[in-house]
Length: 73
Image (tube, rainbow, N blue to C red):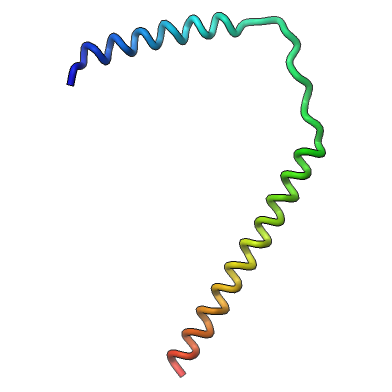
């Protein structure tokens, strides 16, 4: 493994990052805050996904319970 080449590459990368940071400095107005409707829609989607996940867990638990009941009795 060539450590010298890796060190030179890291130095070059650090130099490029310094250039990129100086180019980012700007006085442009930032975009406004997104509407809360999009966040609410995403939150409802996560809620539906959570309910579906709980349904699958319940179904798997019910199947496991039936299987254990069948095997033991």
